[in-house]
Image (cartoon, rainbow, N blue to C red; front, side, top):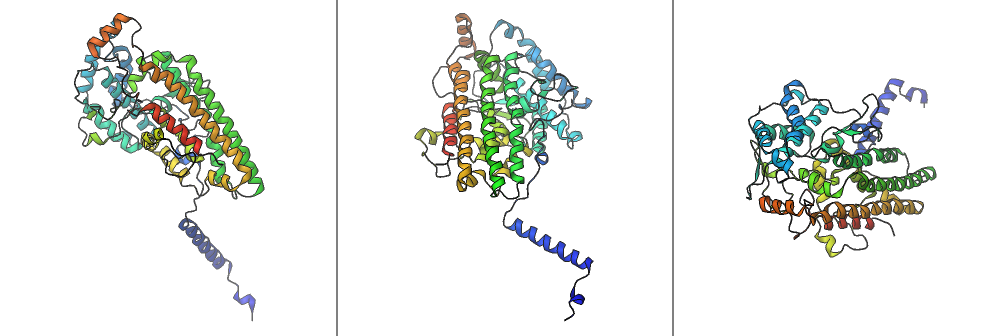
Length: 470
């Protein structure tokens, strides 16, 4: 046989080889093998993570009505149920501001539909305006829903649909998109950071945001570790196991650093100021729980179906990233030990999933990408004795973080909810008589989105503990 005459020419070999490679890739996709993606594909910056590396640009001149209204709001508005002398003095200017909002122009958003950063700025501006409008309105003493004017509601819903985010104030608005470098000539860092917009105008509010932004920036290293993990060709060879073990140990150390940042909020943010002067601005349509009258978005069909819970630390994609990568089962759908307590079962088990709807769409897609990983780190650690201890160390560091989160929440929310808004007894009596603003102390303490707070936080902590491998 003439073997030389049976060899394909080079061009034909290339064609056959390409065809074979294509067939292999198709088979891999059929079996669900996922090709690793770069973080940048999910709008994750290598230096600032989920925070944009450059501050969001101010909206074009056509949107100046919104920008000017936001700039004026802190000076002319106060909380609607605040009966202090300063707040009462603003009642006239406050109603005039809201009237201008109601009678303002309907500004179309189609001119910025292809500019993601300006869409994010529009979302920030419109959601701040919405919460300024709602919470500066004096309580009417009825259970009627709040009507958000169509001048805000219609463009806000339009912008939110494009961004894939809830049409209400979110963690992204108050922290991620609100962070600006103090010195614009230098990159955004922990030491070069301030916040453009505040509701209360207090340094306490800025410190509250700064603690959250510090966690985001410190979490960038975590995102890099996870990206590298998904790029390892073979996670079971000796060198790879050594690297993964070292990285898990580093993740545990990083979580310890996040824990320190969480507790540092006490130094700059007074619990009383936070609970009575800052937190009320965050409250969403269901902040009072299932019986909340809710909000109506004027000019928007089915506005009762919108996600309008308001901002929460539970919307931080960094914290969700840790949960997804370490395989924390908040839904209690997996058989793990110890078994959930009766209190755990009473918690809002869908809370964490629901909070994803308040994240930017690309960040939510990142979590879905992690969730669909063909190489879950917990299963690899279960199968690999050398990885069990470092994996458990990371899980227990996260459990400790959540222990301390419960303590902070108890100090800033639960304890303060039982305190008086005004330290002066006379002012407290006036507030109670005029607006019923003081809480009775009965019923569960709720988060800004209406969830029973302590039950939820304990359930989250216990779900974290159950991820540890025996």
